[in-house]
Image (cartoon, rainbow, N blue to C red; front, top):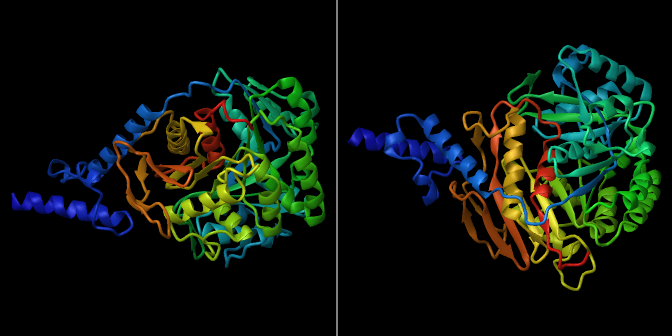
Length: 494
């Protein structure tokens, strides 16, 4: 008996340390670590993941009022996915120290930026300024053994995900060349004015968790994206997109691609952003607009998007890098942080989400801003923050986003508990400062809910794929899935 109890105690202690070094587990987790299962910690662990997965399935129900017609724009391209280390070696580049570059001007800039983000395990996207050098790199990437071509661009990826729902009609507007048009789901409608003679190509340099190049070792699987994409960079399809809405009559608009303008230089983005705001403002106030953000480096540009675009959209989707950079650009909470250390602190994330909805949204009842919803996703967990009274079915929305992150990364139709692992914190707080409420994860009911003022937060863990097959497009799939299960309350005018 003593031996059996000791093994159980050691297992509980080991699992506690596994999750952020805390030997004390929430009470609701102790049920899953019993003496009967203590002889095999991997089995006990799989049981925990299976409980969460089963709970997700019971929580995910479609809303009463579903979208029927969704218009998505405006960035679209063909993604060339290739081993990052393999391609750089094929380009005769040697490993070395990393250095971030806002714009890539040479192969050496590419190498330094890739190493910089690989050693952090962080996703990033950059513009490559030299057209001819980019074409040579793109040719080498397409010819590299194992290179794969996929639908690319946030708008096209979101459109592809939405098109998996037969009841949804999807309009996609963006620079669609012949190869991309061939790869799109037949359910997607592309206006003739969006078709062009050549495709835009983006290069996706992927790396695996633990992969090594020289002295650089990736802490987790991720990807580095770069392109010389003028059509998407200038958002040349935006006016065509807005003009097509009158005929299509969508009940939801999803907008992405603003980040592509950053690489075109300040003069262009300042002018083009004003035109984009005017175009977006022409969309009927009764049609909700979701804005999907992506990696950016220019604080002035991000600040302009915050000030001019966010107040005229209903919802935004973003990851941990974009969230922190947004706060840094606008002088928000925790802007002093240079980067997240490991899994982003839930309380700090909550502080920034609240600040966004208070500063740029309709959390303040006297505000005329439209923003009432922010969908945040990071590797280990997701948080959906909404202003009370505007959105319904958000438990299903946040869990649907987490479930698709797990299954799509592993390339499976459903979550396979043997292929995923729980990396979310088991104990966390509602805020980093007072009032600071202690919260914990319950695997059998894996959505933790808290309120701050008139903003409600829904948080769920992600079952992280141990050996992801493809990381590109996960954020877009997460946002698309979250939107499918979200319901806008009809009594609230936009």
